[in-house]
Image (cartoon, rainbow, N blue to C red; front, top):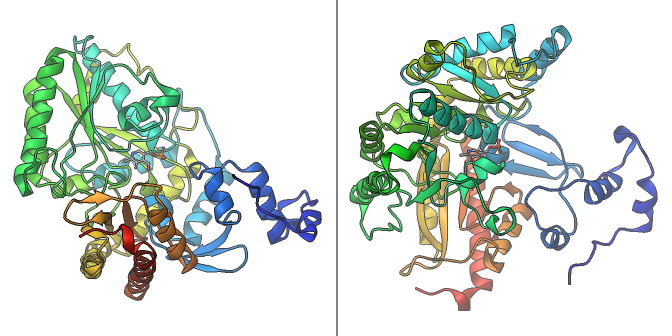
Length: 475
Ligand SMILES: Cc1ncc(COP(=O)(O)O)c(C=O)c1O
């Protein structure tokens, strides 16, 4: 039975305060528990951990909760805070912009910071990706990208091309359209999802759907997309979407041949290729964009998260001139899309300052160097009977947790083992995300000693949990 966490008499009285600045720690926690809807935690989980962790301040790769407990941020918030916490210069740039101009409608106008940001980004983008439809986050970027693909296909004379091919197990966001691509267990609540979406296998060298290994498994995964396009009828398919390196789906790094072949297949069939760089982008994988690892150019790219390092909400769908050309040729047609906060000038100011920091501090190069170090340290965890695989590129890494190495059997996303590991790492001061995979994606400014500490905490937590669950572990 789920019980409400106990709150002492004193704590109950202190919650009377109405002004946030007036509330003590107990009152803040109580208010959070009573009024904040935590996006993904179940109520049982909140109760099990005796309430909510409420954070107050942060610096670099460190966070402090309202009791002054210190944590290492092993996942950059949620793969977001690439430039690190506590960047006063970003806050100041935002304040300056808010004082000057906080908002104009995105319907028919734009602002100087949005224009400057588009210019700066165009220089950083792979190849000729250079036109930006700004929005407020990753899900919106994905919605925008898919809608652009569908509308452009229709405007080019292919109104029946409405289908989207996504990869099973990938995550592209939680608004209704993005969620349809994600194909989650939530179908029971929200189905039927967007019509015309089909799912294909992921490139996955650890557990290939085709029983193949290495590059062969990747090539088969790309070939399968071609077969799916044929199966659906090429004249009905608008686009294919995928992350260059999967994130939530388990950090699978495919061969460049996977992406190059997928590019060829899409071109052959007149299908647009969307890459989702919402997590991969902005230095996370040791390149500014992960697409650069693979030697291909998508038609549309989605970006968000690291664009502002989380100092303000912002995303974009980015297209090549050939895509926007359709709107130039048919100059009386606009995109059937409008987002009130698209290109918000305060977010644009945050992004501009964030990108300046990237340049000044060589954050992308730092991520590449530190990524090699992180991966080598993670390899040491393979000795654990429950670490089935270690994967990653740059500072986008994960270990896969299994109860049987030979059978490659996961424990289950919310299994007691996984929950216990999560609890143990958090108690020891490491914030990460532990489900079938334990993610390691710290801010790009994380110091080596902090990486060492993250690994040591994971090592200790796994040892304790393995001892407690010894009888369930198979060879
Ligand atoms: C690859 C990918 N795309 C899209 C999204 C959705 O982004 P947001 O949560 O900002 O809507 C996420 C979120 O984690 C993501 O990982």
